[in-house]
Amino acid sequence: MKAIWNGVVIAESDDTVVVEGNHYFPEASLKREYVSFSNHRTSCPWKGQAHYYSLFVDGDVNPDAVWYYPEPSEAAREIKGRVAFWKGVKVTE
Image 1 (cartoon, one colour):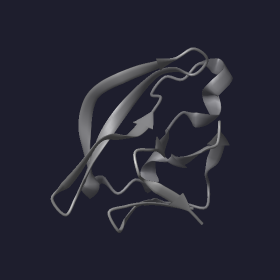
Image 2 (cartoon, one colour):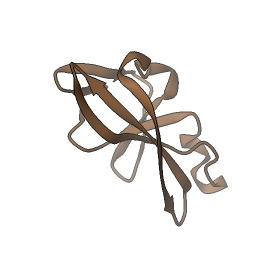
Image 3 (spheres, rainbow, N blue to C red):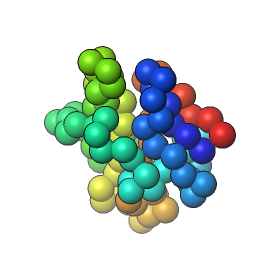
Image 4 (spheres, one colour):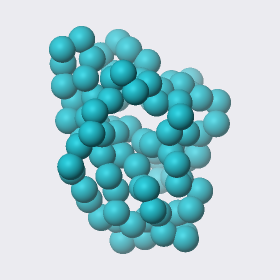
């Protein structure tokens, strides 16, 4: 699977976990040169607190387009150490 935004592959892996229709990639597959820290947080009733990264590609910014659960609930333990994408990031084979 590949996560692509603004014509650039942000992450690529053949080891994704699908939860609620979202592919969670291993965090190590994330190309860090396109990622920056975000203070944004949200809460999921069954997964826990989500943290975010923003994307920077060719001068364009996609704020909070990557999310992850640093300490997911026991029910969501399979996504620990993984990241998922939204906000126009295309996930494809």
